[in-house]
Image 1: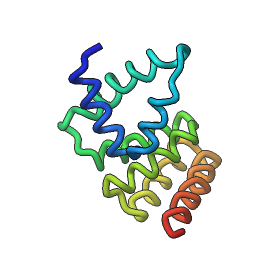
Image 2: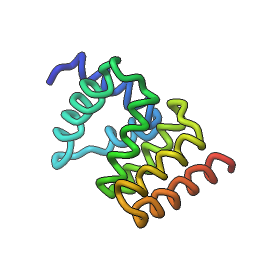
Image 3: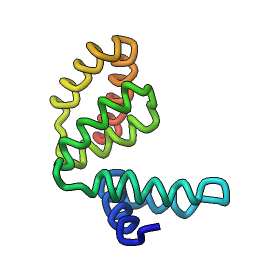
Image 4: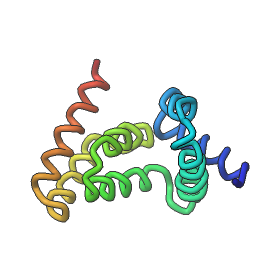
Amino acid sequence: MDEKLFEKGMEKRKKVLGKDYTENVMANTDDLNDTFQKAMTEWCWGFGWGDETINMKTRSMMNLTMIAALGKMHEWELHCNGALKNGVSKEEIRSILHVIGIYCGVPQAMECFRVAKKVFDEKKA
């Protein structure tokens, strides 16, 4: 493992998904998923998110569309929250959802709208 890339990944992961969430995930690894969590933090968050060529806001917008296309709604909710932290506005998320409807289908867009509403409602509370 590249310790420097892992640490960069932890920093990015905390910034996007939140310190509490990230630390909780890492604290609750076990012999089944520990290696995966470390590798994913290094690769996805250190290498991928650590590349400053694409800013964090744009990267969040890209992630919302890709994760929606995969239909991974738990991850979509996490990254919707992260996108808001990275400066993506409600209006931009609405426009992203329109594109998701066009390219991924109306049912997937409807699911994303439901999750986005939940995220926005939780922000108000």
